Image (tube, rainbow, N blue to C red):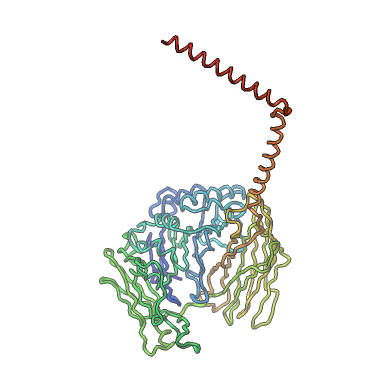
Length: 592
């Protein structure tokens, strides 16, 4: 998703921010927050950080990080309903936390030490478990990632490392340090709309931080930090007041049904594709109004933009300047520097109530370049398989991409079982894999890395399958919730730009997408057995020790000797009592 109404020279200003709103089908709203600042590279090296956050800058300088990308993601992007991903998927990460960076080092061992320092430092800065990215969760991609910054000859001495934590839970503790990196720190501007209650109640959300060096022609090189937050909000759920925390189903007469379906009836309702009956406002969706603008932002960049056709009406607070895009599908608003700002999108006009009216007053989602889904196959606790289904929706253009898998070491794949089968208009093909990079796993040392360069013909579907074997872990290697399963990181798909002439702009640049993460069930021992063994062993030891102790200590006498023994004991006790009484009387007489 490109920024709207941006000047050609992005580097003329030091900081700018923008919020882009895009209504989606099924009563959803995509809100994309983008914050970008530039700091002169010479000033950065002289520890004059200016708009660059000092806490993060000192970490990058200490470990020699030339470029860094950090992602926090939750939920699943519904490509079939919502269309193409925002920012062409370049700001999206897999479920959990994902980190990759280019480090300056002479050897791989030095790069590993710097990577360990970087993950531990970022773990404390963002209140995340990045310190758990050890060597078993670290890979060195070969084909999937390319530097986004201008590095020049420094590329020869740089090492790319990538790590992911699919089990990490993203929460408000990660949002707070994210906002502290901004110049206005969530107190003014579009960042004042960000709230943990709204962000983590979204159907899908992603937080991204990208740091790269930029060297525009004829200008001084700068270090750029770009922070992005994307969320898909459910309009009905977001508009629910705080006093009604429990969602209740709406009555039947309030349901938005698609009456064009042949099976529509009084007792059957198929939801409409667009929220044509929805009206919403900025303050109701986010729970508060936008508090002016950040005083440090570029005044030439409109802070709020929305993707709706020119035909639709939008009402805003007074003092706002509206600028419409020449394509007629979007508009932006210049917000006053002081005072609250809100906007209202009224319900769609219902002239004729037909599909044409809906299409005229809504922006149709853009068709993605590739659809992807992944799942487990097979059964049992010993072996299994993975199947990835990749579909090219274009009727006339092939798609070339790199498919990358980062698998845990206890998921041992059989590379000879890897198959790629294509089904489509051109028939069935098996020779679509152009290049393979495979790095096998080492037990408890590193995971499996698999990268495939694949080319899908137009209007075709690829089925990638392979088998694997499940390992049995040591007793201490199982987590407390072992029966839940182990999270397997999402596959990373990098769609390569097309080099054919007359290619649309959307295919002339690299785009990304992630599949969903998987939940692997491993053979799990019965964790109650150690306690049963302890109980049985303790009982047996108590019985054996007690019997042996009685044999060694107890005195055995005959039945006829019992009276003497008892009498002798009674006499000894009586004599002892008499002696004690006599001593007590003598001591009492002396005192008197």
